[in-house]
Image (cartoon, rainbow, N blue to C red; front, top):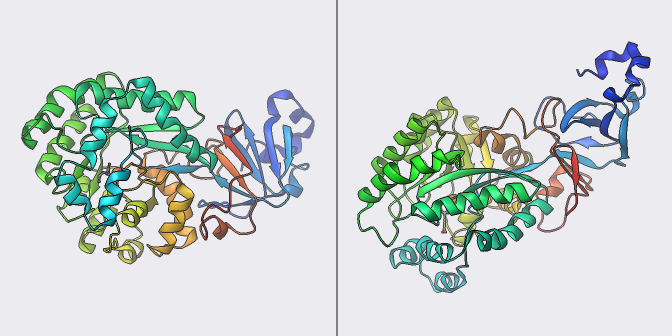
Length: 418
Ligand code: NIG
Ligand code: FE
């Protein structure tokens, strides 16, 4: 199974420094979506998971480590992955919240110049360093509950300099914090005030902004908002074509408030994920499945916008469409800086099982980012992004809010102090 376990007969030779792991954790239960459930000891070497076995066999297998930890029956999970956030932004939208409570809809607020465009103003007003400073606490909140990979979108800059600023801030956060950051360019998020025509704005993104973003290596994927208050399917398709030209994978905000057939567009371009999906038609699910598109469910937005139309979850389940769960952390539709709370919402509102939700924030989320070969599972050869939880059963991670935190967080095999 691993170079340690398979070399049992060469015990003496194994007592060399090169074969001593960095960390060995034993007496644990493993929460996993891979085939190796139920093992009870792991070793990390040079940032990767180098051995998985039974606690009692570790001496026989000559697994030694500089740091050997008795987990006393705690549970080990992969590091959590938040695969859809708008974590970098300026200001807040508390005033808009009051309007919503009085009955105004997200679309009404947006059409009156509030919503995304009001956050664009606040984000444009901040310097790069100020934007790092106000975004960092949100990232810290996620990290403290065990989120070791976060996707961050642009989309509150909406001009060349401000989109680049947002993406640089996201990259900077990844340098300052032991969290892997993946960025998505979301220029096609809303029409900025200086443009009156959506087609002209899309052309501007294609001619000027996207090539520069790509030249500076600032985006790992391209996203869009396919919606009445966002952009039409054909406008989003232009963005997809440019993404293909630039060699960037595609994701999209689709069928959130209505159905514009955005999900099938993502399938046509073999995108990584189709996100939101409240208004997805059941008939489109096989198309997504065949194209390898992950459904990213965002129950925080459903909750915060008091939506009533649920995504077709049972049909997704029936077709074994991989379902990821993410926070959608943003100042408007999902002001929730907690993936653990979102996991609870996914169970309570979307009726997903705790097992489905755990896969949704680990292996399926990894796939939604194209990272399934390196993160999202406790498996030999994967990055040692792992969490120890002081719980009796994995369902404890989902059944309440703010009741549990990981007792240890490992990022690339190194323990993180939060
Ligand atoms: O995922 N739907 C579009 N974009 C975000 C909301 C952004 C905002 O309201 O600021 C979302 O819900
Ligand atoms: Fe979003």
